[in-house]
Amino acid sequence: MSWSVMFARVLLGTLAILWPLPAFAELVSPEDLQAFRRPAVVPFPQNAPYDREIATLGKMLFFDPRLSAEQNMSCATCHNPSFGWEAPVARAVGTKNTPLSRHTPTILNSAWSDRFFWDGRARSLETQAKAPILTPEEMNSSFTVIEARLNQVEEYHEHFNRLFPQEGIRERTILLALATFERTVVTKLAPFDYWVEGDTNAISESAKNGFSLFVGKAGCSGCHATWRFSSNGFFNVGSQDRMFSRYVPPPPETSKPLFKVPTLRNISLRAPYMHLGNLRDLQEVVNHYAQVSDTDPTLDIAPFEATPQEISDIIAFLRTLTEEGTDVRAPVLPAN
Image (cartoon, rainbow, N blue to C red; front, side, top):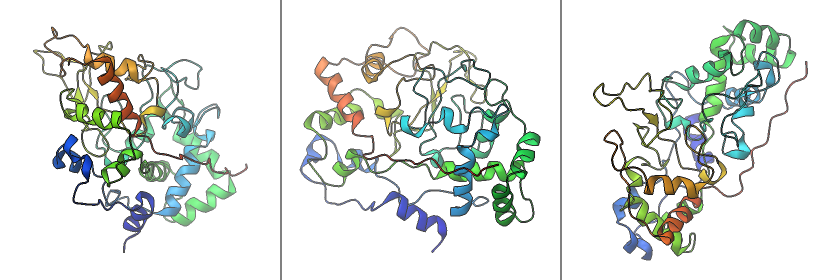
């Protein structure tokens, strides 16, 4: 059995779904529920298979401020596990103490994604990890500086030389370790998953109705599909930001601003919302989609009629997507 399969089984827990469907099936079809089943394994690239020690090294680097120019921030500064691996502010603040241009996207369940950042410009987690490190407004560092720093730390020097004996500490191995760790950041079972598995008491009646609305008249599942509740697609949902996606170019005749659909897993931990962080809570998010303009031909969504109770039900459902007992411990970093 491969390490990646063993890891996935431990990380995801018991994922077998209990069929036939229980009594709540009358709310939604079996196909609706099937579409949101959790996968059995975490996917790792063939050229970067799961390795526990490399992932552990990557976690150390993820939390280590040595990767920033001023050694005053780490990857975890913006991707805080306590807030769904995001920052609890509209715009995170970079190493120069200036707000960034967009809200921090989560790294949750990134192993299933093939494009990263709100505009999709990175095609791998290794490429994604590199950009914040080098961007002047973010960590403002360089790999020449980082390599020199890490080589001065005996524990890092030993780890890299043992895990990468032909390379040691260099840009490629640093990024590979970071990406390997990020692929292990997978949401645990949430009440919604227990409900799908057959526990009819795992979520409230309001949340069950909210899921029916989510996959029904509200049309949310058109974009928020699969077990991650993200299609990995790019859409115009009524953005205030006119910076177009550079790597998913909009049709010239519509000139649409396109942004990546985020996962909804652990969504109740991740306020504020949207790529500008301009919606404060889930109430504002659902209201935005329910009341979006129906006169803009470039929009990829349409408004839907919803009573206050139905909006409340959708929010109740969204809250069932947050895992219970989240506990991520920061690693002990090596001393200088």
